[in-house]
Amino acid sequence: MRTQAPGGIGFFLGFVLAAATTFFVIAAGAASQPVLSVVALVAVVDLIALISTAGARWPPRSSGGACTRDSCSASSAS
Image (cartoon, rainbow, N blue to C red; front, side):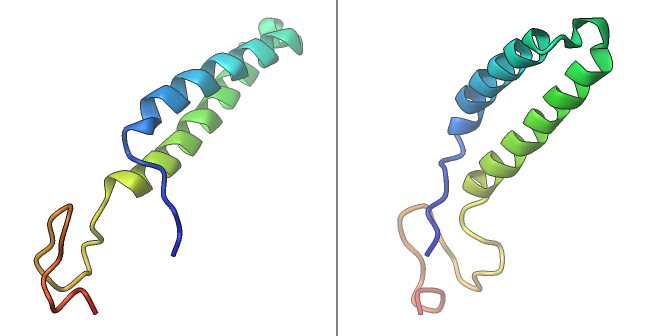
């Protein structure tokens, strides 16, 4: 069973990664080429969307039973 990051972590993680990415891109000399900054930030946004969406889509839609956050019916618990 995989451990997923909770959906609420996306904002905090996105903020930290976007700030760090901006710092490193500017330090690497991309201030004269803003396209590199945009490409780096798009990669960060895509990564955060991928990580936080997995945690936000609980339960899976193909579970086959009526589920709540804490419990599922007997048909989907097997």
